[in-house]
Image 1: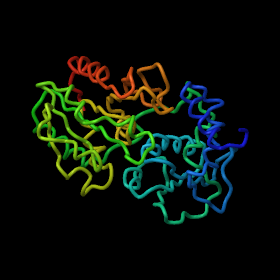
Image 2: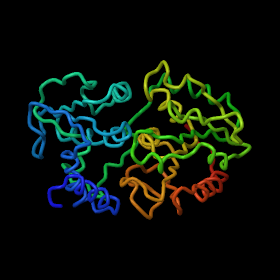
Image 3: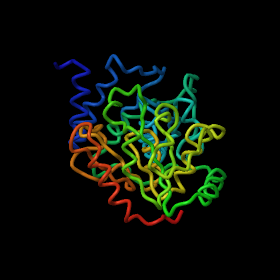
Image 4: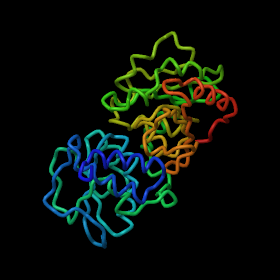
Amino acid sequence: VPDCAEAHRNHATLTLLHEDFEHGWEEYEWRIQCKDFNFPEYPYPRYAGGSLSGKSLLLHAEQGLGDSIHFIRYAQLATRAGARVLFHCPPALCKLFGHLPFIDQIIPMPSAPPTCDFYLPLMSAPHIFQTRPETIPRDTPYITPDLKLTKQWKTWLSQQPGRLKVGIVWQGNPDHPADWQRSLPFRVLNGLAHPDVTFIPLQLGHGGEQLTDETALNIADLGEQLDRDSGPFMDTAAIMSQLDLVIGSDTAVIHLAGALHVPTWVALSVSPDWRWMLNRDDSPWYPSMKLFRQSQPGDWSDVIQSMYDLLKTIQPRKC
């Protein structure tokens, strides 16, 4: 159907999954016309290319928090092109992004941003900057944790037992349409149990109730204190920066780990999100990531076994 936005968006995700970025990003622009996308309107032109020198560019968040963490890297490209960059985003991201050197101003939604020369939906940036698999802006870390919090969590971790300290996260946003296949049941992580590995749950909100006393894992439980006083993602970023490894499903926390350049293992369903591509165990988006893929729908046993075998070879990281 030539004018069916949903069909074009679906074609885009399939095209991007197969690493055809040239056609994929162009098709992905159709998402803006899809009925289930609610994009803000701004009283100034949408950026369509051309010089940004001396101009102000408002990037606006879209979709999930993980999408913003993933694509905020493109603000760096706009800054290098001479723009003053503003970011309009959910309040949950304001503190995490507030100190990034390539963002000049953060405006929490739904507050109205100041007048700018241009605006751009954040996930249109790869199309505008003509990103191809070999030109992905992959310099990490592009997010850095709060120094004071990092020191606090480094001290806390030094008091925990175990040769390795490994963060775990298993449940993504339950409202995501693909959550049923991309999130892990916590119980499958029991297959990672090692006597000299301490696991630190980074799960907040939904999914945390799956953590039980009967687990086979050596757990250093943070209880309710993670991000409670520091603000969303702030403790999470600080503690992850000091871990030897983070293991989890496709979640915002996993994107944050990659953006921090922390060694990260991602458990992917047999039908992964387009950004993880196919038939590869690395991610061109995140150099510190290793991908573990299901071979059968709903069966995580081979993924967990591969992680378990590799976990025995991991050495502690000097942070």
